[in-house]
Length: 123
Image 1 (cartoon, rainbow, N blue to C red):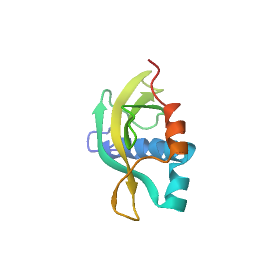
Image 2 (cartoon, rainbow, N blue to C red):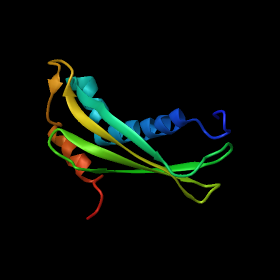
Image 3 (spheres, rainbow, N blue to C red):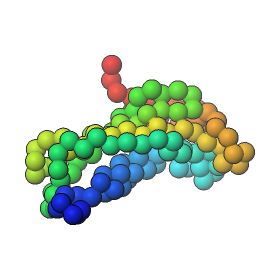
């Protein structure tokens, strides 16, 4: 809680991070990092606070991706408050595929890219 008795702003980013890592695990990015030293970096992130969350509450976070390219995508987050019955926050992060061995941006491994396709927002 912050000085105004709302959940602290940094907590929203921790929830987004947990959601982001879960997606990375599901699409194989963490496996790629462990085996090939090719994995994700968070290049940019932001949050739009829409309603003040207080403790206790149950939060639900949905995610999907947009702007998928061979080496990056935008991951969107929607946080819903059970207590308030509304969207409490929306956020996004730009994820870039990085070759840690050679210290440069690279393309997603094909198997990862194919998995990422299934997380795109339906058109």
